[in-house]
Image 1: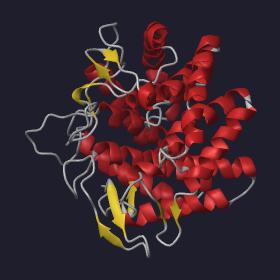
Image 2: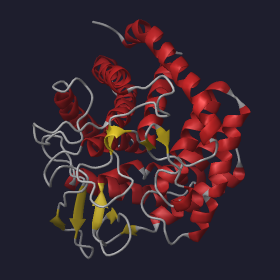
Image 3: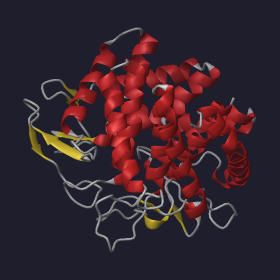
Image 4: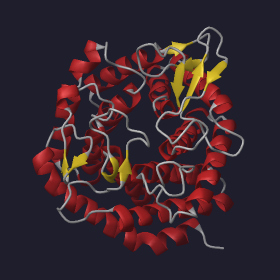
Length: 380
């Protein structure tokens, strides 16, 4: 039976070549984007969301820059990332436009800055963001509410990727109150979002007074009861992180169950995810970002399970990354993105900046880079 070390040895040339292509392309695109806040590409050029600094994806470019800085120690990557982080103070201290995605927004900026440089101001920013996230907890309902407005009982699968900020905050403050809220939300998600077959809901609407399930709205997938691929990926990666922070085996079991369902689906699609694993057969919508996120989660599962289980998840991650590379990757300068064929939502509605199938999403690029960095680290 092949071992993890043997698998990584066999893939070492690919991993190193892929990293060289990533680094080479980003070294060029950074000269235009600099400390911008890209979200998606239109006609091959990344847009800039600095006119809406509260948008949830506005620090994914900073996250890419921090990964580049960690790998290369080139100062300009750090300087641009810190500039983006400073611009986000307007949103952090403004507060009123913030919601459940503060985890994404400050994990990839302030937490990464603090972990790499020891910047105390970054630690303070991230702790403030954690307090804001914890304040969104509905204790009676047992969940962290999504978004703002009139959807008081709504929670979403994406939030599994935000609660690591709470676990980090407990570690930093030596105060388990943040951790308890993260566990509360993870338990609620595990019990009410994850279906028996490993598929997940995107949204669950709870009675805010007692936490009873009222509805499962369609969200960004094809329909209620379908299987939005990016939501599946958030769930895999989110639950394995929750396990790593808490040691609760139930979270690892949930991550594995969801992963098994998704890997089965992907074996039928050539390992590039459709927008929804249950979309109509005639639909050709893909979401490369779902694949990149999933690859990161599978690598973390591989790190968390006994030796005999590791190969399944690691080989799955590599198969996905290679499929994304060959089918969705753009390695010349014809498009500023690394991965195209992304989709924001199956039904974009009136969202003017939606990406449907043929553009890029910055978080797809981020998680692709993160996944390759994880494999490089494992090779060491």
